[in-house]
Image 1 (cartoon, rainbow, N blue to C red):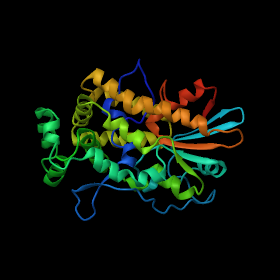
Image 2 (image 1 turned 90 degrees about the horizontal axis):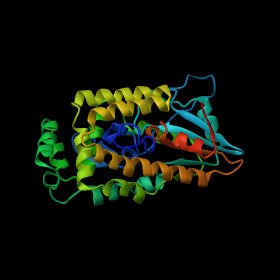
Image 3 (image 1 turned 90 degrees about the vertical axis):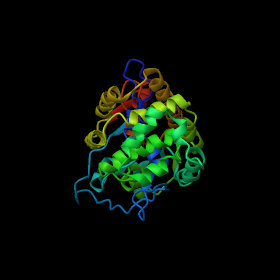
Length: 333
């Protein structure tokens, strides 16, 4: 649902909530909403902690999955770009040798958010995404509230909790439930696993405030559209969509993921104008910012490794195409 794919595509279907279809984008990392171990129905925002990951020497064992990985070159400047999922499975790893080798020669690694910002995300989620009283039923149209209530009728504790959320955060929670139905876990998100094996400097392509503003700055109508899109598909169908996204990501081709996002968007968008405005705010403007900061980090002879949501990469206005437009040759590895 969160927009984590490529930048503006005026001639393409607006992805609306579909873009990340659950997961991907940055919000699942930034605002990781997981289930409390003590109470499997209570959502809470947490700072993610990497799990141990053994990286075998070449020839020891096959890689876990292909995963989208690209090399962009312009003169003596090199930017490695990996498309991530912010949730995953243990058998998605280890990384391929070409990825590990790129990490070893990179002067800096850039995520959407720096690890330091990520550890501070919980307070901001509470501050900007939650209400002290049950606010959601009065912030959204009555038909939308009834639909959400029906979706969570078998989970009264979750329904009670979501009453205190603003619409944008409620939409992310519904999306997260779909990813959990596909047995995907934040612990196995790509950034967590990269952090396990990279010992150098890790920076963010945007600040926590910038990322939060992308969602908190949505109008009421846009937030309602965001939530409405998450409720179009049945839980079973939504989970199947997440499973398909995960499969395509493992195949390692960002353009296939882009095509998937277009197909899903056509199914879930409710209001084209609102969906386009959401795309511009939480996807396209962020992609342009990512590119600008990638170029700022790039120096001759000092490769940069960038790991951002896979849906940021593909399509005619994706980050890969933006790199080409800035004179980089881009090759899939």
